[in-house]
Figure 1 (cartoon, rainbow, N blue to C red):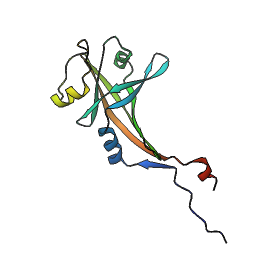
Figure 2: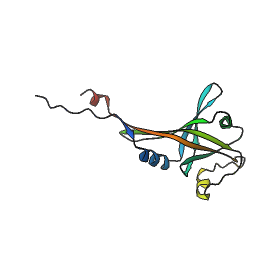
Figure 3: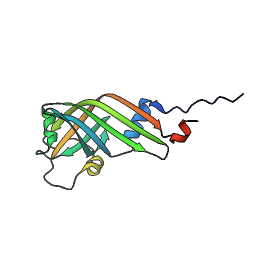
Figure 4: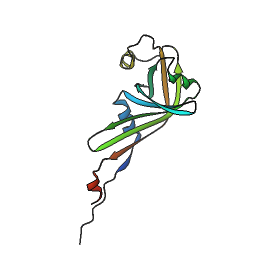
Length: 143
């Protein structure tokens, strides 16, 4: 009689603590927002402070549509040899056309080397979720 083996668990949910650990261990993420009748995704350099996401943007960039459509999704992911992790924050974005109160260290980490950039965007999390997916070669899945 053949021994039964449990198939690998391909998709698991990350606990909130693990989600924040992943968010805090990176500084590049993707912001998704509605611009007119389209959904756009932008890569941003960010920092986390007080449990909120902060990044800078030029006033002429599409990010200014945050003033109208404040609901956003923010994603951070990482890929390893045999697993992929992804965390998504759904929240409300706030556009600040002036300097904001961040620690000097965080301002230095997120600062883009363009003196015309004086606008900040803050993403206020309302919901956070994360998943981990195992990468299993096809020949192993068919066993």
